[in-house]
Length: 314
Image (cartoon, rainbow, N blue to C red; front, side, top):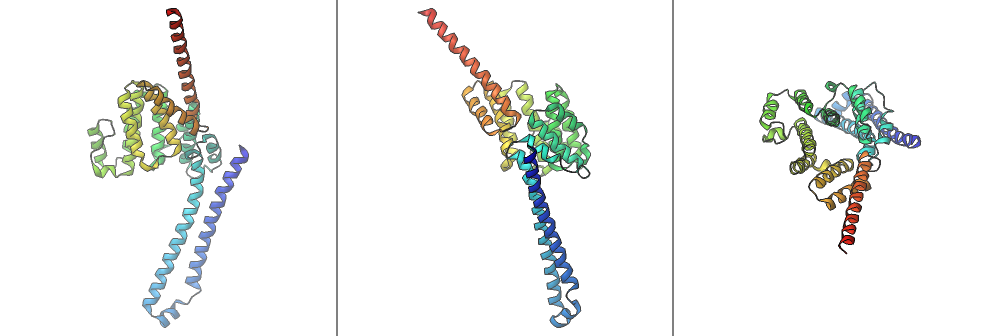
């Protein structure tokens, strides 16, 4: 795997080098336009209006060059993120992001590492990593992932009753406006929001995702599979068009658990087979295989029981 890590990191460095090179070109362009052309002569020969237009065009071109450079640098990071999001390989993803410098954005990097470890099924390591994160330094999707991962850890450690405190902590972190708190009290811990303005708030959408995921886990634990199905679809709808392959694999496993609880074994098999075929190196694959093996054993027992009944009847 070390060779593959070097390959992916080299690809990242190429994107970064290309971005920085374009940044330098932009700086050289501005330097030439500012110092290489006599602005007084230009204003005298072509008029002040033309001079202002040329100056404005220089600024616009420079802004476009810098924007392209930033996009190229960002694309390199996206390629690394796709190792987990698209290829469903949390082990390679962790190995790649561990090479990042911890000097800048330490908490973001640790959050991504915890996400990788959680996707591997290494829950103890993910728990330890989460303990080293300062959530106050996280924003946006990183803050959301932190609370989503920590909530799941609480459920797995038998601390489900304390998940509500995490929801409140997330809410406080985004509640600079009192309307968030009022809306949360009105929804009573569920993700049913009525205020259209709040729906457009990115952080509030992340909060809805946290609540929907927690409600889904609670419903499955309480064997309330009808509610679990509703919360699962709610969680998927909140992602919209941003559902990546690794998310689909996780959702498919939850879907299979719900189908099993409802007694729809054939539908459960379809979801489990999807996990096995698409999950690559995610922990979901092992879990799906374990469930499928258990279902096969139960079917064999049922067939043997039917055979014994037929023999006794004859």
